[in-house]
Image (cartoon, rainbow, N blue to C red):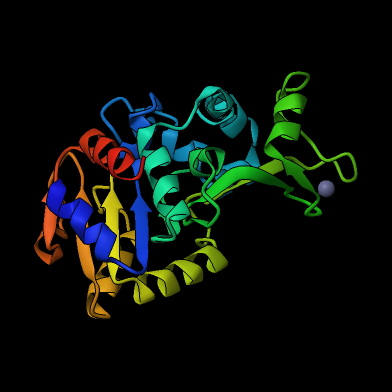
Length: 242
Ligand SMILES: [Zn+2]
């Protein structure tokens, strides 16, 4: 870990890429893990745009806890370590596959959510916008929050199956990855594409890749170093930039 801290201190532009491992450390269930959402029988339908169009109750019923319960979770040490590195002007941006909004809650300023986020919801009919908190308040009174203007359901800006990835977040992520002299992957198994195609962009542009993940990833061979322990990473960073 000492070598990684030295590497970070010498870096000029660090891009961070985070996945589910960062969230599970905070107690949030891994959508793709053994107990995760995708193992539930209705999971495929819950985040499928055609099913949402047909019947938004499938999403709202299935995700009541999973998405709207996110308001009860707090950022963990990895989120804080990233903020510390951002404040030290080392980290220029965070690319995240997570939809839990915890990087923003921790205080990260530049966050690109490549799988979208429930931070905003838009009416499926007319595009009217609501915040996460507004939708949470509506859910206390109704099973499916609907537009006051046109009566259609509000859909979270989470990227559903059958939808395009958020174009702007992805373009910004590509630019960030290409100009980084160090790409730090934290808690991602790097198996979900096209998000997993971002770290190689740094290497191709002449930067270095470091991966901190509990399990091996398909990109380990591209990395100059791999570490298994996210919690140890957070402790080392928080000590070095106390
Ligand atoms: Zn509407």
